[in-house]
Length: 142
Image 1 (cartoon, rainbow, N blue to C red):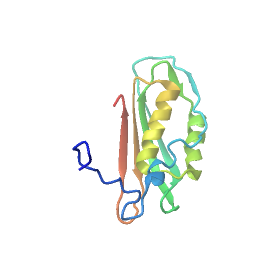
Image 2 (tube, rainbow, N blue to C red; image 1 turned 30 degrees about the horizontal axis):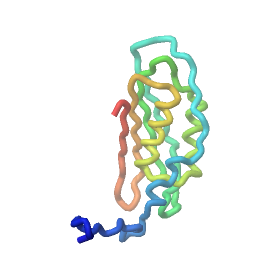
Image 3 (cartoon, rainbow, N blue to C red; image 1 turned 90 degrees about the vertical axis):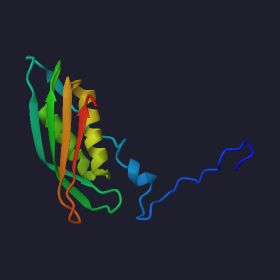
Image 4 (cartoon, one colour; image 1 turned 30 degrees about the vertical axis):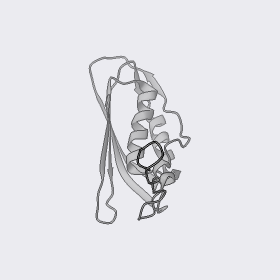
């Protein structure tokens, strides 16, 4: 106990038993990526689904490539995503070290910032690695 009567806490572990650390966990979250351009929406009350089967990135721990399909489903408000700009944005991930979970949430964050949709869902379906296949989904509004 400390002088003030509270228990002394153990410092947080800098690295897990498997060698993961804070640098791995934050990798790619703030990496510079191309802007996603938009164009003015002409209609109301419809939804758009875009399937991007060519997602690749780098695992920040192993430096091995990750592969997956990103599916974006959104209801536009005043702006729609321009597909060529979206493709350029997604392809920029191929040089970024980022975990699946961070990539899906970063993609959603950047899409919401670009077009301010009424609602949006980003789903990442990633190729099996070590016998495990991951599916990550992030929604706006949360």
